[in-house]
Length: 347
Ligand code: ASP
Image (cartoon, rainbow, N blue to C red; front, side, top):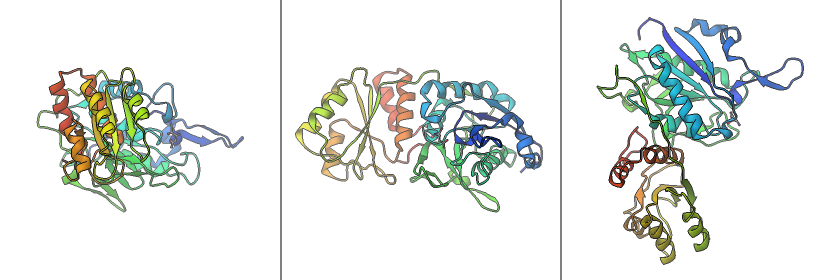
């Protein structure tokens, strides 16, 4: 590690982490991150210079929409040259969606963008936010051999740093709320921060020193359809005939399996013939889709359903919005969906 100071921009978007208890009333009130050194004097001991920007308005992450993702990406792009790393404070509920979306929106990313939040407000005594925040800052500023230690979009929560587009919120209660079932942590935090260097994406040779680019558009018209025994033809047909529908994330059973009934395959084929993209991911948290394993998966493949491998729902939604937002010819769209763009699946 080098000893020169890293400069970090913290961007507060909203969520539980930004709350504290009012000493007089006991109510939760917003925490003022611009006074971060007053709140956490110990931060001065980290080898970083910190600036803070607060998104306006600050929102609960249930209200986050793709327009907020684009605004956040632009904010980072516009400040990219001035900082060594970025920490995004975000509500936990949709953090994996936002962080996945940002991983796709950035092209040529060569600096750390670390998302974090907390389950307990930062101004509450037993908060998990303080450790999450301080370690996220340390990771965003960390360098190994003079280069950023984790130059990708990541998510830090309770002692683990994950590739953002591999994460999913799994608990509304536990402090270790996030999981990355199909990809190992990028770092494990104990007494020291142990970086899992082989697992971390390296920017392409051309990325460092190259201007960061952000995509300007995200498509809408995406649906998630989760299979369950008893899903009937008219419900599925009406979902797949929704006006403006462009792509469906189909959450199938186990290793990518679905009913083999004639009506089921026909409804999918009709949608695909109308140009709707159907991407198969498993509704199991861990493991991957292998459509050639069982007859039930093979029939989907023959119907033109794409394999989503071991992608999370969050990454699948974000990737479809990003790829379709580019309005490319169908063959190029399919080619982008078939390959990992930001380490979001392992084939
Ligand atoms: N509802 C909050 C949010 O996602 C929860 C949290 O931050 O943990 O914005």
